Length: 435
Image 1 (cartoon, rainbow, N blue to C red):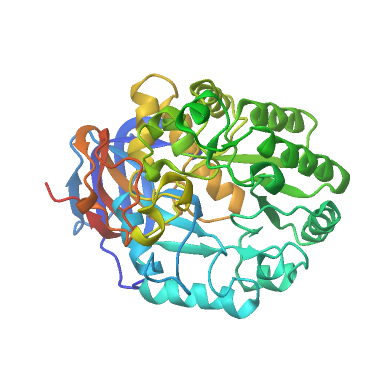
Image 2 (cartoon, rainbow, N blue to C red):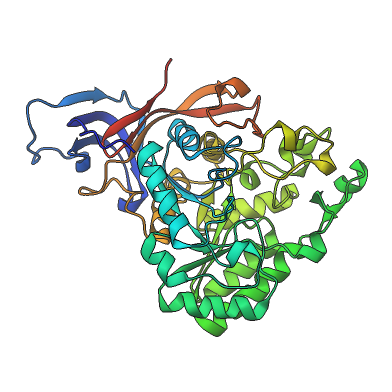
């Protein structure tokens, strides 16, 4: 990321929405030396230089820059799908100023040298903040645990096997115990391989009607229940990467009621879409976990509102035409999402389903707190990572608009209400929407 010194800037006439301060008010924000110098409605006591660039936000919102807690990137090994640089450009356009990168690369991020490679490459090529996670098991093979302590020291913010689920309960118990010694977060995707094998969408009437093999909700719930029992046994820190069913939410709620150190995330796709969107075998809707029923989607919205689900992620997973332009049952899982996470999430606000403060919290201060990152807040002294957003502007997503190297968006052609106008990282403008 470029280290050019940022200008002093005063953003005026803005609706400031900052969940970290429980703030939703009309006011101003002063940015100096890459940090938030002042924020809020009362500027009477604030002294600042006369030579300051003033930006009239014209009543538009300012949010903390989004923190995306689950991003898959091809580099190293599959740069044709996505590089750290191209992902950062997509992130900037979507208002994401910090992204947590998964270790599913080639080679896998399972040693100190590769953690350092990601950090160095991000420093040199990315416009946004990139935080690597490290593999929980060597080669993501689910058999041998990695050096958690050394990789955390090198900069890994969490440990996960990415798209894979660890089937060995003893290994998971040991990992939770060992990670606890370093206060490290275990982030786990739960899908029982034997129950999901061959499945391509949610099991049910729709799958039968389309003639496609289904994945039952039990494939997600059974390994999740096992993991939470192991958390109770070890007192480890555990994050369920992406839940998608009402039963999973109930399991998470029960674990939290017992005081366990448990959090949960959800892909924006599972808050905004359901299995009916697959329609005529549209492969961009083949996701992991699969899109569930409308009842499950509404249960996820409710779980987000009451805090059972802690964070929203894009689950950005770029796939090129060689893996997506196939019959539905043969296509790869995954969709790009960095550029659409906020606009898709704002549907929930405009529909009256989720209050704006709670919605923004799930994409800013909550993930920053979970991963121990410096962003996600507009509090004075924090990095000036912020976005200016017109939450009412209508627009339609076209494939040619996407900055990601891959174009596999389930929202292609979708109508949105709410667009990022400007993105700043450390006080520097890294994206400005061209009207």
